[in-house]
Image 1: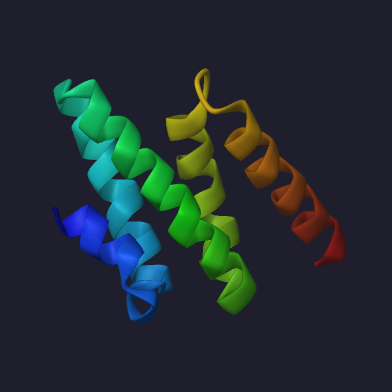
Image 2: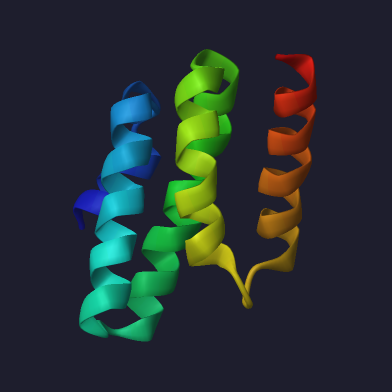
Length: 93
């Protein structure tokens, strides 16, 4: 439920929320939690990360490897999004 509130409230689209959702997804994966809920949190983490990259690109860059680890194997469009942005960011800095 907290994951849904985080994504549905535009005021919660912050770097801290992106980190929280990423960490939550990592914990769900590590504990073998319900796949449907885990996938929802991973998708939400990506959505908030997408907002974060515009507002705080440094934090988005730091979160990108963790997010990629969560997206591997089941989210080709989101994975490509993170890789493309991260590559462009790395070349720009």
